[in-house]
Structures are given as structure tokens and as C-alpha cells.
Image (cartoon, rainbow, N blue to C red):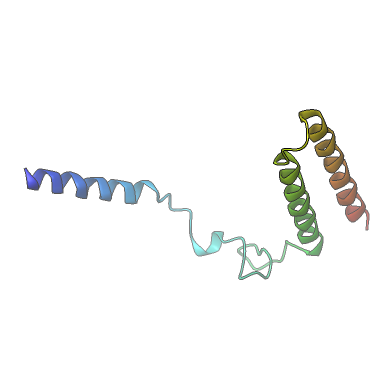
Length: 100
């Protein structure tokens, strides 16, 4: 009985370890190189300052929207209006940044 249980546990561990590997995680598929931005596998730089600023704006507004969603003092309508205003402001800031 012990041998059967151990065999089943080993087979399960073996199966789950290979079920999570898809073979696409190679060194050349890495998008980020130690915080220096994203590089294509042939070494060309394609993640510039503008994209990092857009990501920063998106992070800030995502945080702001989450804080609005979690504010229990606001009604559903107030949350919806504030989220819509934040989304518009985000789009405006990104549009201004892209025009530069």
C-alpha cells in the first residue's frame, strides 16, 4: 500500500512539474534587461522614454481608480463619475505626451 501511494505521489509531482513548462521561456524571449528597458532579441532598443512615461501615467491612474473603487464613503454613482473623470484625465495626459 505504501509503494502505491509513493508511486502516485511521484507520478503527480512529475506530471505537475512538466505541465507548467511550455518551452517559450528562453533567454532570447526576455523583454526586460535588468531595468534598462526592453530590448528585442537582436539588441535593438524599442522601449523608449515616452513609453516609460506612459506606463508611469497608467500606474498612477490605476492606483487612483482602485482607491476610488475602494472608497466606501462614495455612492456607486459618485464612484462612476470620478472614475470616468480619471479615465478622461489619463487619456488627456497620454495624448499630450504623444504630441511632444
